[in-house]
Structures are given as structure tokens and as C-alpha cells.
Length: 425
Ligand code: NAD
Image 1 (cartoon, rainbow, N blue to C red):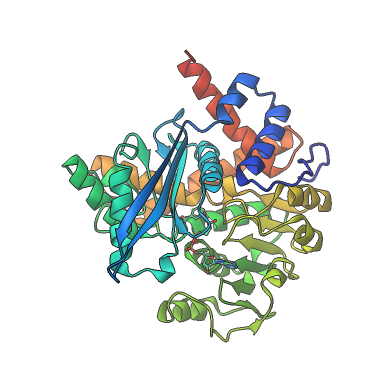
Image 2 (image 1 turned 90 degrees about the vertical axis):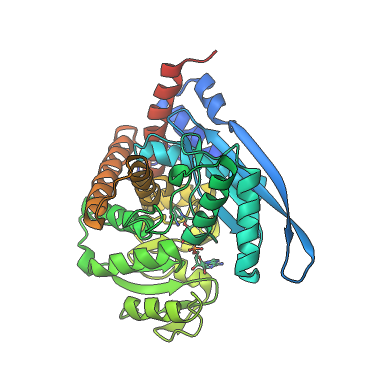
């Protein structure tokens, strides 16, 4: 899908939210979205910022900033992860919340979009400090969150552990048992089997679907994966299990290349035993981080950070297919270049939708109080992701545009329907 009919803007976007709006504007124009609906979507429904004084282990009080933005509840309760990182800010949370609206709509889930975060460095905090921070944040957001209002999940820097703390704090404020207030909980306290690997699994399903459209056999395909956390490690493992040779992997500590293929099982064992980092793993030669993105491979999976595929990097990319495991890894400037070069990009709001899809299954199971087997979860997940891929691919073709704009159009159709059906007063 490489027509040049609808290139995205070539302006610079310092703001992540502006980058979302740039894509929204392009999709809205191609699809013919009404200005009224476009205006609604350009403005998040609710933005909350809190300050969280925490007693640190050394007896000193530190004050942290916490954020939650609800972008839309048109299609259902808002859904979106909570990120712990030093660069969390209003703009980023706003952008990620809008992406969640579009992602949930693309995946055909009865959810709106939200995102939250705390500006902190979780790697430098003790378990006790993180628990107090998570519970203080939840207490401050107790009227924002709710199983039928706004449902968080893990994101960068958070995991099932934080979600269990969140449920505990929420239950204490609201005096009840509300497992459906968040997803991504540990299995055994309301978590779903299959959730941990779900985002990586969705990347795998999207990659296989794209390769099929491109007439490429996964068993003859090479791949580079940036990020070896939740998304990247599961994506690398699952793609490898499908026969793909993973030639490059990397995290914030090291980036490795092996032409013959990195032993992903050995890398997984290594990170498990070495504080979740690749540093010191000897399964490949060390390369510079940007060399992973421009490596001579067929498929590139950015699964770490946003804005890593810049215009400059895009000019040098050799992969035929990019599958966005991370949120927002490609800048709008790079989009235009990739389109020009005929590189197929499976966009974030489709490719990493596997996580929120199984989050939805977790919430359904919590509401039922009845739990499914992992096989059942995976089968339902794969069917959802395959359907979403087909819709996006077909809309891209129909509107003679990229898969990214095709994904936005897929989402806009559903959100527009919801806004019009409910009415505006
Ligand atoms: P994570 O914290 O589990 O892992 C992040 C990984 O990125 C780690 O391996 C880390 O070392 C690496 N990283 C950090 N800085 C880096 C750098 N400068 N260069 C290379 N690697 C770097 O986070 P995650 O949950 O895997 O999320 C990764 C991305 O996927 C984020 O954009 C997130 O928003 C997105 N995402 C996550 C989920 C989910 O279910 N976890 C769902 C959808 C989207």
C-alpha cells in the first residue's frame, strides 16, 4: 500500500499531541469527517494532574507529579495504561490518551481512550516507595478510575505488581471488591491468562498478516526488534517461533547484532537472571542503537520508545515492513519518507492493540467472575487482531492511503457513529 496520493505533513512536530492531530487531520480530510466531530476529537474530555507527596525510605518527602487524561468515553469507559518514567508530561499523556481512543475503536472494543502516568524513575525507587506512590496516585484518582468509568492498565515502567496495588487502594477507598477497575493484574487476582504476552502476540499476528499480503514467507524473513521489555521480548520470541530470524535486539543498556540470528530463548533467560536488562548478553556483537533501526533486515519492530524513527533515520531504513510495537515510534516527517520509499508500516494503533484486546477479555472475565483458558484467550485475541488488520488494510486500499491513515479512518468511522448516535446537546 504505497500510493503517494496522501502524504502526511512534512512539518516538524515538537509536541506529541500535535503529531496525533497531524495524523487525525490527514485522516479526517481523506475520510470527509465533519468539522464538529473533528473538533470534539481534538480536545480531550478530561485532564487531571495531581501532586503526590511520598515518604521516601531515607525519611525525606518527595513530591511527584501524576497525570490522567481521559480523551473520549464515546464508545464506552475509557481505557489506557499508566506509565512511570521521567519524561512523563501533559502533552505525552494527552497524545497517548487520544491514541487509546483510536486503538480501542480499531480493535472494535467497547471502550474509549485514556492514559496516565507519574513522572518518576522507577528503576531508582525501592519496592516500598513504588507501592506508596502507586497507592497515593490511585487514591488521588479514585473518582476518575472505575470499572465502568475509566480502567487503567500497565504501560512502560509498570506491571501486574502496580495493578495489584492499584486495586487494593481503589477497593479500600470504595469499600468493595472491584477487580475490573484495572487490567493487567497478576493471574490469581483477577488477571487473564495470556495478558502478559498479548501485545507481543498482537505484533506477531499483525506481522504475519502483513507478510502474507506482501507474499513473503515468515520462514525466509529477518527481523530487528528494538526494546526487550514486555512488548519487545514477547514479540521477538513469538516471531522467532514462527520461523523468523531475529538478527538484532536492543534495550536501553545495549544493542546487539547477529547475522545468523540471536538465540532469543537464551536472551530471555539472560534478562530474567540479570535484572531485566540485556547488558552483558553475548549472543551478538554490540552495535549503536540507531544501527538497529537501519539494519539490513526485512522487518523492523520498534517496541521501546516514541519518536525513534525520525525523518533522518527513515531515509536510511532498509526494512520492507515496520510493525509498530511501541506507541508513536514514527514521526509524521518519517511517515512521509517511508511512504515514498514504499515501506509498509503497520501502525501502532493496530499493531500493539493485542494488549488492550486481552485487557478487554480480562475485564469481561472479571465482570462475569468466570475465567477462560489461555488457549481460549489466544484464539479470541488472534481472531480480533486478524479482523482489525483486514479492516485497516481494506480501508487503506479503499481510500488509497497508508495503513496508518487507514487505521485512523477505521477508528473515525466508529467514533463518529458513536458521537452522532448519542447526540450532542
Ligand atoms: P517495558 O518497560 O516493559 O519495556 C521497555 C523496553 O524499552 C525495555 O527493554 C527498555 O530497556 C527499552 N528501552 C528504553 N529506553 C530505550 C532506548 N533508549 N533504546 C532502546 N531501548 C530502550 O515497556 P513495554 O510495556 O514493553 O512498552 C514498550 C512500548 O510499547 C511503549 O511505547 C508502550 O507504550 C507500548 N505499548 C505497551 C503495551 C503493553 O501491553 N505493555 C501495549 C501497547 C503499547
